[in-house]
Length: 421
Image (cartoon, rainbow, N blue to C red; front, side):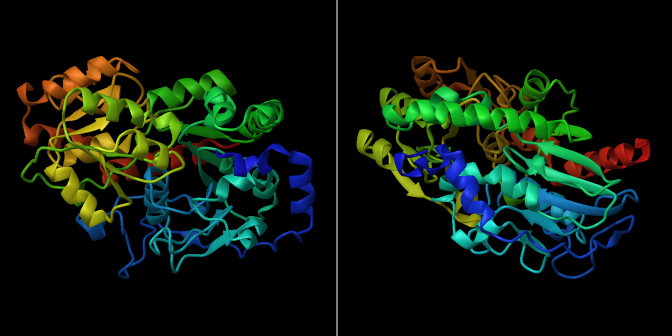
């Protein structure tokens, strides 16, 4: 969050701006879903059987509507939502913002309803400026009559108002980080005079977020860390269903000399730790991703190779040719660690969050203390001595396949629907 994004601090001005838009029209009634809801056309199961996975047998669940925070790029949360959208292929989609180009046309041909904020033309580089508008905007989305609303949320989508009689299941990637667990990081990214205003705004968002969570019938956590945060912040229990990873996109190759980091370049990802550890270990390193801290890190670590965003094909090749893949921060789940193993490469990760569930320490990678740059550097220096078998890494990654996710999610939604009332 940069200083030019300070609009989101002033909630009153933001609410006034949103009120100038007329409420959106009601969406068309969603289509009833069959036992296997995906169509037979070429778009069927894009993250499922079209890529080599058999279609999941989805129990009969009736009419479904889907919601996600914002569809601007294809990162971990968006790929998870894409798998959900494939599973419920006739369901209408509701989101605050949609960038068809930024999401590579992934949701083209689907019924996608956006909020009035779509008129601002925000994209991945500017959407944070609208943050104070999102709570009110998501509540203004009008869903059709349906039996199930399935939201995918790391910030606002769980606050959507569901039709009378519908069950709301929220797949939670994380309670909103800036509001709950990373306030200090948010405050550190703006100038000191604005911090008291931001602190008050975050208090308001926390109050709204907690209220919105009470309208959810069933939360699903994407990891044990998220499960713990849902319990701590919302007072709710949640089963864990790990996100889907398109493991079929990756295959082992010929490893090279460079380390690899794949991440948005934002403060809470702790990329500076990976870059500093690589410097101390005298190891070349490549960084895939963009974000507000790109310029500062590039200036501080000129020896690193910053590659920007990579296509799916290029990313698969980068993984396969990496000496090892670094995950220096605490991720709720961390799809990067699983993708790396699917490509037959070891992972060096912080022993925190999702890595504790996805990396087999001493076998498919090394886990080191969070924020210990010296330990990270030692792990880099000794990674070639690891008793590492690419086949074991690939096998471990398959635990998190799209097909496994679809089976678990559809079964949970069916149980929640069966138990309503």
